[in-house]
Image (cartoon, rainbow, N blue to C red; front, side, top):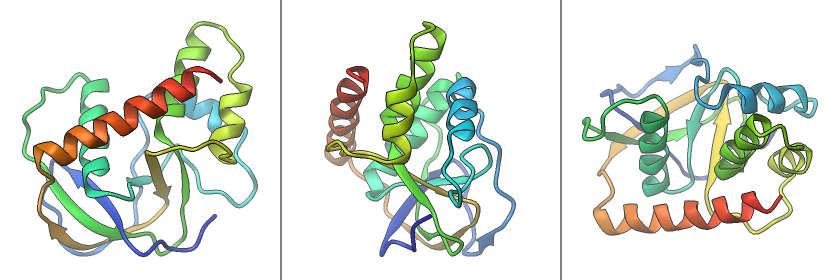
Length: 167
């Protein structure tokens, strides 16, 4: 588990007050990948099955939320709020694209072990990390990223997805 980063960002469809959120929600996206990641989780790492998510850039947090809503079959265009946050109990960061790659490998009955190892101990040049931990404190609401920033976040994720597909 890592010590707090200087700045992290979380996006939500809900307006949230500045506070410590102590009851982490259950992860509902890519359930097979989450189960495989939990089974291989290093000692001392936070659970990815029940956690809060953030990203190192506001536009990545917004894209993370868009991806989550898409996986859940929810319509785009919902209101979005972006927050600067911190993880007081520590966190882990892994390449977000690896989660979808692991889920795809499991569904195709392919070996996901390299992708799982890379998620917990990154060695490649990833551009789009998901940061997660059991507790998240909202510091302040910030401006929602613009279209150019969101487009660049999509390009970063797509680059990582292509890298993850090769594992």
